[in-house]
Amino acid sequence: MTRILVLPFLVLIGQGVFAFAQETVTIPKSRLEELERKEAELEKLKGTAKPDPAVQNPTAKKKDEAVPQNSQPTSVAAPAPPATEIRSLASLAPLEKNTVSATDLAAHYRANPGMADERYRKHTFKVQGEIVGFEKPPLVRNYYILLKTAEPQTRVICDFYPPDNFKSVYTINAGSALVGTLSDTRVPIAKVGDQVTIEGRCKGLSGGGVKLTNCELRAPK
Image (cartoon, rainbow, N blue to C red; front, side, top):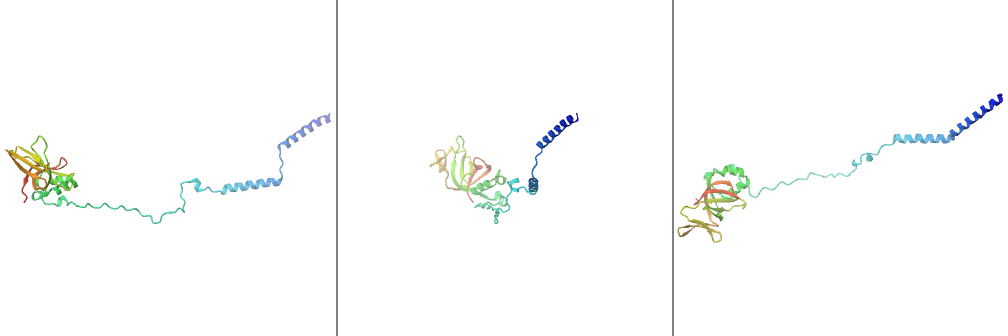
């Protein structure tokens, strides 16, 4: 009876040992030490390795990049002053005691219309200059005498009203002369190229130039 019970027990122990042998792998000691050494070296390399700054910051500039040594700020040349400088209007003598040239009158308005208005607008004074043309608006008795200036864009326009005894006023000789008719007589008034002195009241900038109204031809002093 005892022999019968021992035999199955030994069979069970043998099966357990066989199963344990299947799950356990035996390697040589030298191979194990080699693997442990390589693992230690790998951990050491991971701890001491440093990231490449060029990879982390691709926009960073190299320190040894060439930098120009003689770089200086570019200087901008100041604009050249105008060829003709206009005197300050405040420094001029009182208007009533002077005859203003047509060239100066136009230049003052071109340079500073506001200050020119303060000096000339709504004032009556004399203007001297050369006649360069005439204008005769239709359907009115008025006519304009144009005086020469250095700036064609700013004309001096003198507005005249003819005497009541004039029947009409018109230009002749391709617009180079201005005449009026008195009864049956043609009376010359002015022609292009004449040097004249005209007295009138300044209206400031009007009609593409500096306009004077209620004008009269005056003999120059």
